Length: 193
Image (cartoon, rainbow, N blue to C red; front, side, top):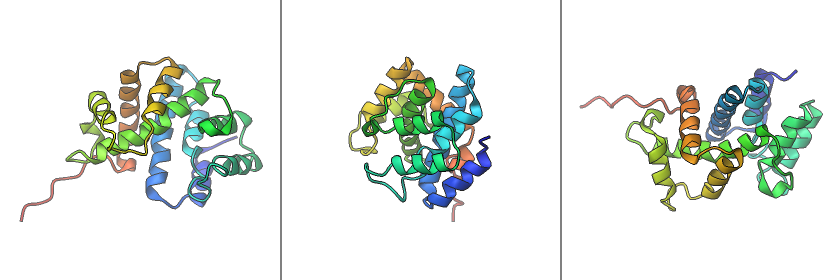
């Protein structure tokens, strides 16, 4: 039986970077929300999102990530469908996305990072200041968050059969639910001197 506490412990064992941990939490929030929407296993989908990049910090190359992580998850008894979804989120893995969980993980991964970047450049550094329209506008700025694949965001929504704007708004709302944990709940105005 998978539980979030042991998944979080595994993530922390391999990932020291606070920003990478927050990224995985953001993807988890989006995955849990989609699981609820589709009537799927929220715990399984959430843990899949939470662990999708747990090996990336130690094994960042395309030869290693997510393959090393897959072996670790197998050794720890994680189910095949979770491991397959994590493998499928990397286009170069050769694992074709077939299930809703696999498609959702791919669709949420890059988008969660882009939404985070969009919030961090807002005056209050808050998800409350981000909406689908502003994210779409930022997507057109090639210099902004240039490492985030716009094609993956667009194709991920299309593969799920969901309108891009709707997908963006849905993920923003999902992430708002854990805005404090993500450090995106907004910053109080600095006291004037």
